[in-house]
Image 1: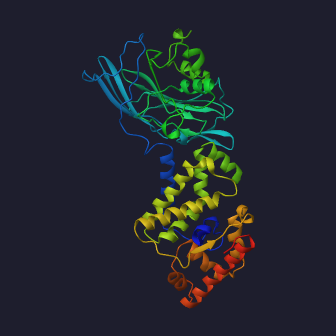
Image 2 (image 1 turned 180 degrees about the vertical axis):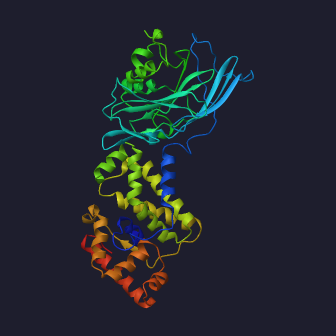
Image 3 (image 1 turned 30 degrees about the vertical axis):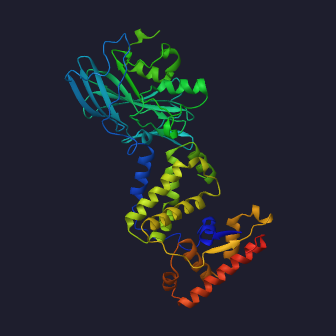
Length: 265
Length: 175
């Protein structure tokens, strides 16, 4: 014998008749905005101004984890997609911390088309990009007055966007790769290591699945730093240029002189 | 976008699909929670936010044809849980039915069962049943809003329960 509640049986009921169009006092726009911001990682998943340590290749001049010396240069800037960088350059290295912006709003997949929206610019970039060809949007950074670039490429099945800004004393820094596998803008989980865009794709190629992390979120690379034309992360495998970096991204960076082609194999 | 496409997009984790889900169902969800908690707009907003956040977190289990009922169930549960934490939940009239399942009844679709039972009630009686057992409204409040006297409301509710028991028995349950 089983006791069952009528109210529980009603879990299977859907009210399509009585109170479906009731006026509500809730602020629907605010709820929608909060939900989207939360799932995009802009609110609850980010701890502002946390430190992300960038490892440095032996060939580069800078060392990571500079803390002892007073900052020679420090700065803060925000990019077009709303990511905020706080950075310090010391005599023996540099620190960067960053919070994610609203990349997911800038590049969206709509009915199979990739739509780029920023300010007054709305462009269907689907036919303008592929795995070799980037779309590059240049703008002037409001904080620094320097030229910055939003670079995007790929296909509707797998696309990515990076917003590059130039950090004084450090070099070009990219933020905001969107993982098109689950369609979310990347959030900087500051408790995890920084991974480059290429790592994700390499991992998928090798393992056939996205890199698992605590909480079930895929691992995204969201930070690339170039200094003097070189990638300055020791996480980069030796063959990063010919295997890991997506062609469209490499081509984009070359076309705007972000990296020195002489350094390529 | 069809519901099939919406679900597929949600499964892929596209936030544009979540936006569309919210656009389609926010009024529905907020009216459920609002009707149950009958409290501040802030409670309703928070519960509505929680429901859509839950939908996103559980997007992999969302199924075509069951999306609205899933949202409704989650909305109800969250709203009733809020009332419980505040010790504001009130018992419902004769909410318990004792059943003995048979082999026949194992595969019964309870959604169809409820629909069948309620369809046999007149509109006003069905409304009363829904107000009380779905939205958790007390019989007194429901009767007042429907401009019924309490005795009539009790009789109607009893009729609804009898219909439900009839349907359960026909589907193989012993009540």
